[in-house]
Image 1 (tube, rainbow, N blue to C red):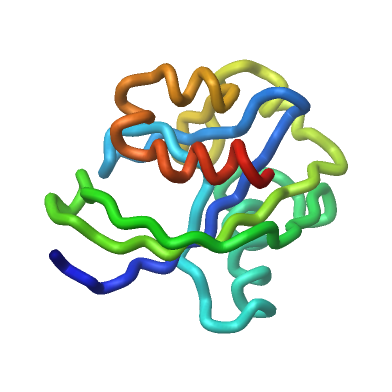
Image 2 (image 1 turned 60 degrees about the horizontal axis):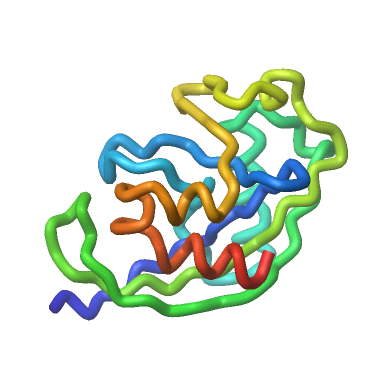
Length: 143
């Protein structure tokens, strides 16, 4: 197994009952917004704020990121066709003002197809469950 750890930060964005997902073409699966984790917390928060604002069309002043937990998981990478170790840092985004585009059940922002789902719906989806059950469970249990 490739023991190289992949450090990723996951952003849980909740509309009260459901979480924001986007379709990742490399994995052919809907995922929580995520970004490579930086070495320092300050830099990581800056990168995540820029990523969320730019990539999901939400002004920086309309959300606040809060670090929740950190977990490590081993799993198969469908994108890289090998087993990998993933070190996840989970953040919760408190949305102060929901963008109008986000109010639809499915929407397109930047180059992303997005949707809202509950964790139960995610775990009932064969593709999400097989590729990302560990992250969905982490969000369900901590966000």
